[in-house]
Length: 239
Image (cartoon, rainbow, N blue to C red; front, side):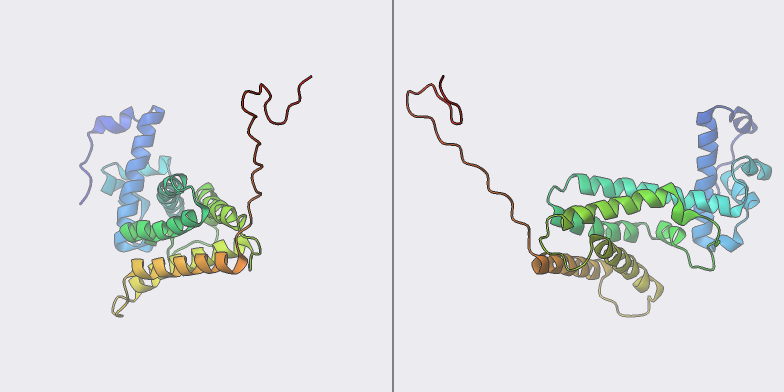
């Protein structure tokens, strides 16, 4: 259902940074909805502008072409996911549980935002080979979160059986593939996706920790108690 058409005064007032951001957000929201419903090939910039309730030509002040709009839709959706995942990591101090919750939480998030998932990770035929999204700041930020979280776990493993980068890549491919494949083959009698993701993440992480063993923490030095009635403290001599 199209947005309510704004009055003619709205576009004329879109001169402050705040107004321009509001208009741009309206185009992105309308574009996201149309792309998720009909696919990128069926969506033109002029149609997105009309869907958002603006004059067809207004959108060209914000986006060069269809791919530019698609780039911004994907970036905004990925940034929203990254913020959610950062909160999961921040409230989980144990490095083992942190990795599990991050990757299981990733699946939970995308299963609840499947339309966004399919827009961010479209089929190769939909993507432009030159869109540059893989090198965007949004992708850099989310990958940094995954790699740093797995790095912190592997720093606690005495003899890792693979590199932390390889482990993170395995988890990324396994989780995203498990989210996507049952969705693309709905006629198959799949086990619940959340159950499959939880099993694969827990099994892999526990196996890496068990095979590599945890590093021993240096023993804390015990301080000798002061003698009763003595003014001396351990480690100091009286002059």
